[in-house]
Every structure is written in structure tokens, then in C-alpha cells.
Length: 186
Image 1 (cartoon, rainbow, N blue to C red):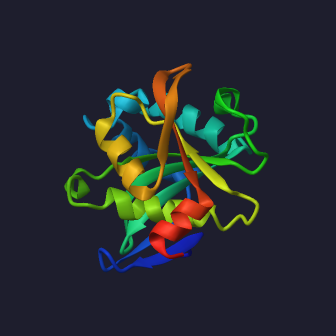
Image 2: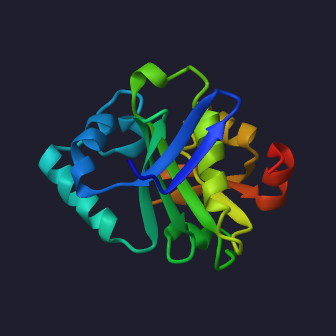
């Protein structure tokens, strides 16, 4: 399989990879959206037909790229990497034209609680920072999602402030390139 990004993570001794989502991935992502640990934060536990329509629209949105995340070839996660400019989040702070944001979910239950969230997030941020002009990655996890907020902090994201979004109250968090590269010796 051809990936858009691959990285061997020494901390877990596994290859992390990302490939862009296609409409053929709809059933897998729909399954994940209906998992008990996912749907309270994503609110996409809808019918497969409705989800297919949602995914088709999301794939057509040129301000974001959707990815499946893999551990040693096994699809385990879903990612949305987006440009802050043109997103509702840009109203929450003074955004730079190349700021990017990230949304994620670890879909496969058997990978929960095993320490994979941080290496996966770290790999995605590394992937996003391949755009040389990007100096900041933004996240706005649901303020109730303490586990993911903890993972974002461990990765190098700093909490900024709570923000009201159309579908949630999020915690605006920033990961600055210099902080990330210093922390992870990139």
C-alpha cells in the first residue's frame, strides 16, 4: 500500500503511516463513529447512508485532508488535517495563513489505553510540519475529553482558552514548531 507519510516510531517500535481517505473507507470510518468512546465527541453516529453523504462532502472540502492512520499496516485511526484560514476556528485567534489544525480519533478499541495516541499524534504533527511555512498546529478537543487533552499536552500543545464552536465547547490548543522540534528532537 502506498502511504502519504510513513514514520518508524522508536518509542513503540512500529511503523506509523497515513493515507488519504477515499469513499471506499466509508464503512470502516462509520463503524468507528459508532463506537462508545467516539460518538459522544464526534456526534456522527448516524446511518451509513447519511454518513456516506457526510464523508463525500468532507472529501470535497479542499480546505482539509482526511487520513486513515496505520500501525504496522493496520488501520486504527481517522484524522482531519485542515487549514485554519477558512475554518470556524480562525475566529478564535489571530491566525497565520499557514496555520493548520487537526482532529483525530482512535477507532479500533483494542488499541485504546495502550499508549498509541501520543505516537500517532506526534507522527501527524510531524507530517503537518512538513509544510515549511506552517509554524503552528491548532487543536480544539471537546473540553470534556480529558484523555485527549492530556495527550495533546504531552505532544507539546499548550492550552490557550475554551472556545465555543457550532458543535461543542472546545479547548483551543497550540503546538508551535519550535516547541515541538525541541521536545521531540526533530
